[in-house]
Image 1: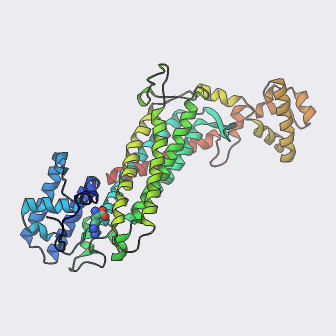
Image 2: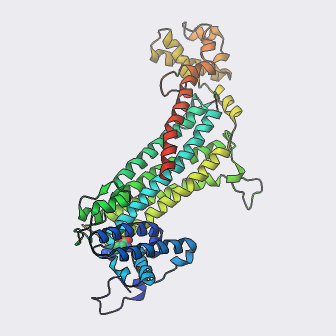
Image 3: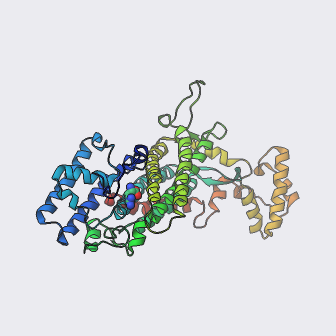
Length: 467
Ligand code: ARG
């Protein structure tokens, strides 16, 4: 039986009927729907609409639906159910008879879908936080393993200054910490309960909204029934958070791809996460990285789709809102499938630490430090910059590094150059003088690695606690 056929004289156009259904995708919400329905049933009992026996029978029926769904995926093969709400009603009535129809007393699918989506987003925040914490742990481990090894750091894609490999890796950790923060924040706003909002103006039965919110682990009931049934901000926030996370993964993937080319040679692609070419036998391609970059595009597309779908909607519920489901599911599922793979990649890729260290030693990346040397002798920086620039020019002409110039040659450029210049521009010293919080001096980086690990421990524990 349909949920709404009474006032209709004609059957629906079959193509339209099938086209407007959402069960094919909102079947993902079955567990949320069953939990929310159980909470509503308890409130119906408290309001005197269901007897104790009827409540027991409804709860038993809901549980059986869950068991059947878990036992076989074909159970969800229902070409008639309009959506997950209709599906549960149909199944419940099949299991317990007409008492099943009582469950819809005093509620509307508009509050149900809003509730289900909040439960879905909340669970998504927890699962993704947990998977993200695992990735961050893998990166911190790699940073620790890299020890004191240096590499070139780039601006404008050109070698700029040497940096510790660990410092470079920790840059990604910062992005992911912000993503984790945003997920926590998003969870907070998603975690309120629309049940009891009715179709848009509040239930016509005296339902205990606090009880339903508590039952589902929400922090409170929503404050306004019109907003509660039409709001999808929490979906938009979540998917935007995911799009930023996907964007970070994409930047990471792009850099790993670059660094794994023969041209850089800093990273060896792990075979377990790469594929070959059907034509060129010698090839190994970084598919995980390319697909990560590609999938980020679609997640960002999901965020855009949500904004555009909702931007013109008057209050309260409109069926357009059904279109917010698929971008949400796609974004959540994409990111959730990506994270463990990226973690696996990160744990198995090999860094050519020797090659990185070697690359950090040449190419005048100590020129900034050389100018600092003159600054420390009292030379104004702008002058020091010019003088070191001249020294670089001379070294380029002679095909040598700055330390390949004789003291006489240096003194010809600026009398402030002395013997101790040569040790000052050695890689170890160049790294060491970046000695500010957040800088790449090895002692600072050691602290940063430890701090990241410490920050990560509660994140991991929290994620595990929610799981
Ligand atoms: N499947 C619908 C959705 O996803 C459920 C709400 C239907 N409400 C309605 N008034 N037709 O939005």
